[in-house]
Image (tube, rainbow, N blue to C red; front, top):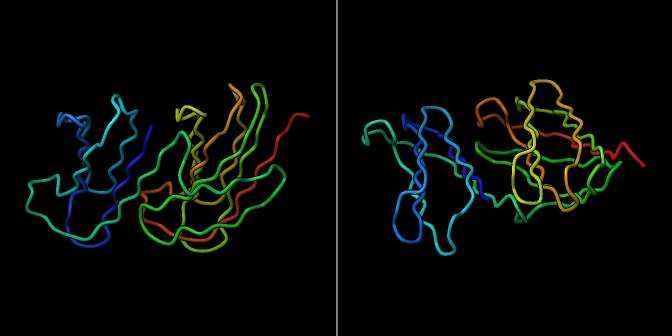
Length: 180
């Protein structure tokens, strides 16, 4: 399962993402004037093609940022330990930071994100070991959520801007297992 996010940085570009299967068939397409995002499970093995551009009329231009992440076994993820506070920073539009933790079925886990600086609208996304979204919560001041863990394994946490993907700032992530 993967996630692709596109945010305009400058210009009048209407963000558009298209993903094509290894055989050339269109798998999925999304476009938006503010923030385009696709989450999808790959149906076939092979190389996929990602095309981005103007989704309004093909004539608008601009600079953009693109973020891609595998959600089951995320790349460049920081492991977190329960009971620890982990600092982080979102420095550009579309950016998300990936973290992982291991948990057992039936565990109850609290995740919290607090903005330290900037205009970041805190957002936490939690994905199960198969890359399926379990929950997504955001707030302009502080976001905190308790999750009941459905299966044993490694979980992916993505942190970013929950407003429109363009805000930046520094934050702290806190994680705690609530049951023994």
